[in-house]
Length: 359
Image (tube, rainbow, N blue to C red; front, side, top):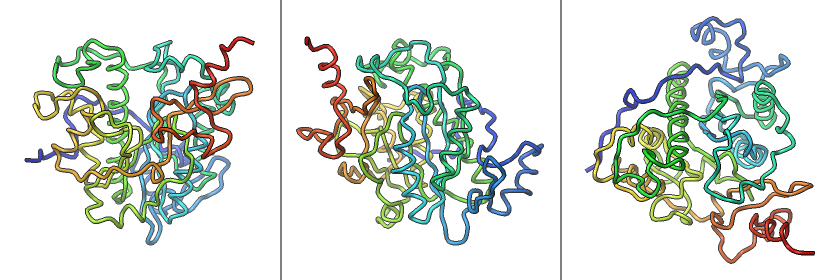
């Protein structure tokens, strides 16, 4: 039988302060002041003082979509998500609200993939300070019609205390003893922190998000995301988890996930689910299986779609001048080269071979 999830997770997740980035709140002393000024009018102030309608409360018949991006600044492939996720959401008549958490300095923490060491940063953000990066994100989102609700910048990776042993959960790289597992927990934790902030925003703005979705920091999109109106038109959409039916490794491909509003609470509180522990049905080899078992335990509807509906891939920039490349291990269209979809995109694996090839 399905487990009943409460809206707020247990006490494992601490709150953090996050000033709404899309609003001019320098003179606001409290959320109440903020509500009585910008939110109630359904407008926001862009940097420079120009108003943009519909950034706070969705206007008229518009609904809102909450987009979450958690990762590290050095991997950020931001423009692709703006053009192929935020812009299409807005074009479909929805308000697009971004919640973001980025680590500024990983401290050489390493990666799952050895090819990451060849990555170069996006020139658009490589030399920016923390405040410049915050402003860049805010302005970039506004340019495509979206609203930056929260940018949470962290100097260094989260230092965890002791994890519960939970030997049956994510046992391939257990967070209690494995650095890779702890990095995953960092993503779960920060996503849940943002989710708590989102719940506060929903109450403050007196709205309910129509859809919730998360996307990786390194996402490169080959086409636009499936329109929200199409997803919401499916029967049972409020309790649906949309993902891709590829590279699931026995579970859910959790690189990019779209959630109906009722599906969001259990899926956005994965950190608390792990920390609560003790659930035999959450036994899992890897992250993908753990996410699947949480969804199944909550009785959610699972819809694994074709690549064309969620057409993104794990990517980075390599070389001089930088080229966009995707990782073969995470590439969904086996047997098809990415440059058949975009002539300027390569496999990172091939660029590495060319780099080391003898003249």
